[in-house]
Image 1 (cartoon, rainbow over the protein chains, first blue to last red):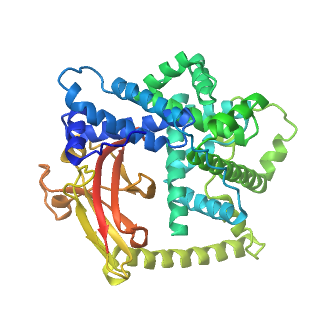
Image 2 (image 1 turned 60 degrees about the vertical axis):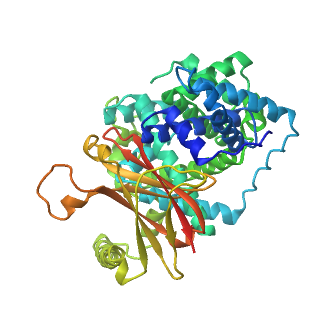
Image 3 (image 1 turned 90 degrees about the horizontal axis):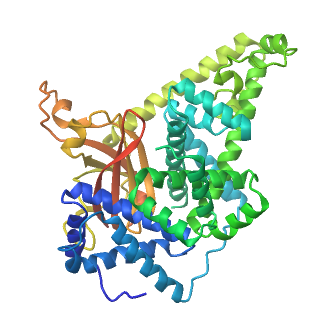
Length: 184
Length: 309
């Protein structure tokens, strides 16, 4: 991969301005684009998804002076085009083998489980109740149960689905933080 | 946004690595530009992972999942988490059902001959509720007293002890200067990368924690005052998440000092306490989001700082 150009603070600032004149909004857009590029590279089975996303952003920054006066419209499609080029180069390079699946060792399992319990306790009572209710049951019973839960909460099933997903994501983030703390 | 079944099937196919090129392009362009659609991708990943852990995938889907989906460390961690989560939910359900059987023997025996489930059943009667975690319930089952009066007395004594201990802990926690040492640092929103102005924090040996006082952008406190609580996530320089603090409450400096005016003056901030031992020398970022009245978290601001020793 070509890495003869390094992103400077000046070019990074210019990229943010190109994304949005308001600094905070630009920062938000930058993070969104980066996370989504990582997801795209991950879905394409790239083991270095984060590096490829950063390389994509760096190349857009490098091209900025050439395109900013002529390019109009949404920024995301431009990033997508550059991401495709970065991906093609990645395919041509010798591929880094995917990391082996970590073995589930009993002490690691215990630690993760303990962290999970702690993080569940840290949730607000409403969120704890919701997430525990949402994920119980299997197959048809689960579907029926979720409909009843949504009715009880007075929200649509899809809104409940999104809410449960967000709580679970925060739970997983909490568990990962707890595990890092435990191993620090 | 609610996707129809066909669109959800396309996402599933994409995640399993089975979409033809044209479909991939459509999905990727959309996930890059549309936040709601990106969220559907994330939920799709979670649902697929749960089905894999529950061994509910067909043989061909399972193979596709292992070959095309389970290719990154991050996704492998998600599978690991899903296993622990599934076990927890299973145990919680089992424990709660046992509790219901113990606490409601007469209702169950009265209904036991009736195989028809009442159409007006509430959620809690179809699925048990979880006031506490399954492990804590098992703990209380170790109480030696078998009579209700003795059990309640013992429980009351334990509760009193716990409350007293909690009070002492909370007092110490709220007054860090009298207990463990804490360093307070004020950060203002801003992004830097590869240089630029950055707040430097020097950590002295023996420091227990760092209180990051995160100044909120004024518009987020005043115009979007429906944020109930805030969350902060500490990210290392490589973007890996190191620490998160939830349920943070915003404090307005002027109001906290007793000002009666509500003219928006004064700095508004949340305080995130981070254990000092997590902070090795290097650059860090803190992302703050606020939870609005509909329980969704919205990104608010990002802060940068550098730790030096």
